[in-house]
Length: 316
Figure (cartoon, rainbow, N blue to C red):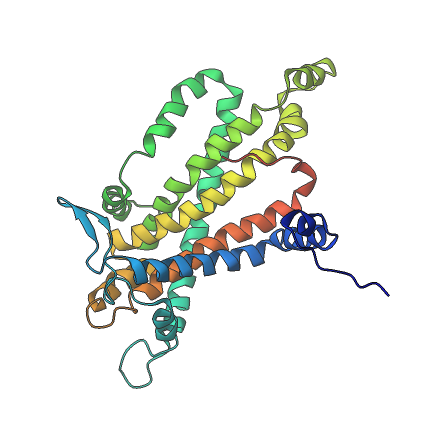
C-alpha cells in the first residue's frame, strides 16, 4: 500500500492542488470590502504599536523640524488604552456618560452639517461641470479659478465666512453659525465633483456624439442619454472624495469657528487633557476618522445602485 507524501520542495508546494485553492479563498476574502477595511484598521494599529515599540522616545528632529514623532505615553498612547478610555465616563462628574456616547453624539451633529455641505457642494460642482462642458469659453475662464480656489487655507477662510454669514439678512430666516460651517464644507466638496464630472461629460467618443447628432438629438438629449451615463465611472470616485472632504471641512471649520456640539469643538476641548489624560483627546479624532469612512461607505452604496453604468471606474 502506497502512502501520499507531502511536497518537499517549494515548486511542488506551489504546483499542488491545495495551493491554487488556498489562493482562491484568499482572493475571495479580499474582495469583501468590509473585511478589507477591518484588516486595514488592524494594520494601522499594528504599525502604530510597532513604531511605539521601536521608535525613539523623544522622536527625531532635524534643526527645528520634527521628522519623527515622540513615542511617549503622552504623545502616543497605546491603542488598547484609547479603546479602554472610550468605555469610561467622559469626566469624573457623577452620572457622566461614557466617552463613546459623547463622541457619538458629537459625530451625529457633525454628520448632519457635513451632509448638508456635501449636498451643496455636489449641486454646485454638477452645475459648474455641465456649464463648462456646454460652453468652452466658460471652461477656459472658470476651471483655473476652480483649481485656484483650493489653494486658500481653510483655517483662514472659516472665520471670514462666519463673519460674512452673520451679516446676511434672508428675510425671516436667521443665519445660524452651523450654516457657515456647512458652506465651508461645501467649499471643499464641490471641487472634486466639478473636475470629475467634467472629465466624465467629456469622455464619450466623438463617433458616439456624432451618432447622436445624426439622429437629430439636441444638447439636452445627448446630455441625458450619453454624457451623464458616461460620467458615472468618473463621478463616483469624485463623490466619495467630496464626502471625505466635507467631513474634513466640517471638523476644521468647527475648530476655527468654535461651533459647539460637534467633533471639532470636542477635539479643541479635549486637547487640554493631553497631559493628564493622554488617551482622551484621541477619542474625537477616531470619531472623525469613523465619520469620514462612513461617509465614503454611504457613497459606495449609492454606486451599487448605478452598477449598470460602472463598467470601469476611473480614479479622480
